[in-house]
Image (cartoon, rainbow, N blue to C red; front, top):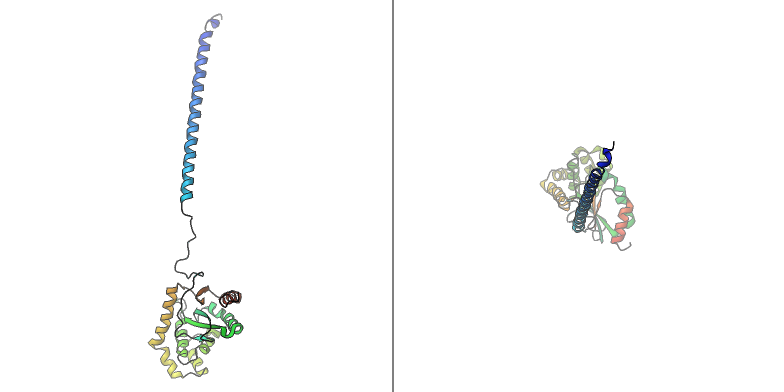
Length: 242
């Protein structure tokens, strides 16, 4: 038992050495931690600088669609017109006779006609969509009636009877509104009538119009069967009433 007192200095020395090693390890670990944090901070700063200098992402616009903030030039030459042909304000409609939304917007157009009278002219443009197989014959009938000065009469009858669209019905309408039926038959099948319909559809494509009804109010685009208030706001603005 007396031997323990003789080994005391050795034990103390060993403890001191161990303590020094631990202290050194802690110092090294602390240095490594600080270095790691500094590297992380540097990366964060660089990343922040890159984000700050990067261009602000913008919401992509739908390619090809008309821009409501632009004013487009739309041809009205040879197109059916309702109202004063010299009216300051023109509402050009690209329409499809089989389109239910085109039928739905008709009361709105009639309300515009009633409220604004000769201040506004309404112009019709053909746009029979490929999804509507009965539309081409209806447009040919309406354009053939236009050749005899009765476009709007045929237009109204077709829209009033959208569930009964057929060439036979258009012949009945032709007789009903007083057309020369033989001439009507020739015009319906004529290349000139088809050329006019195709020209309107091609213009719509160049403007970016892909659906019906599509409107240009003095060149400003309105999409779809919008309520009367939407049209009124733009019409009043164009007429200087807004």
